[in-house]
Image (cartoon, rainbow, N blue to C red; front, side, top):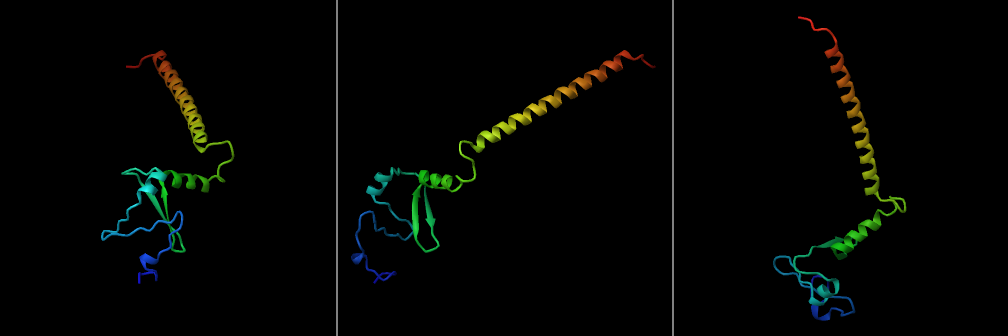
Length: 122
């Protein structure tokens, strides 16, 4: 009898259920049918999610990213992107910095101009 009380020969075959074997190095091989269906190519990364109830979910990168986006969808108001807001904030900072630079440059030029106009002392 196997570790979980079911012999491999007695395992239930159901649509969408695949039986995998862990080798001596801890690796599992995804069946070709699964790789084709999910468009997983050699070298692609997948995410293995461990649930608190002991189940595992193997997700492609795109699905994992999509799930993460869905988790944070409530944070951003509809129709607005955080990246657009960050870019707008940075552009405002740049405008402020450029204005401050122009003011400092003008002040510096005025100060240099008054030094030149004053009589030289020896």
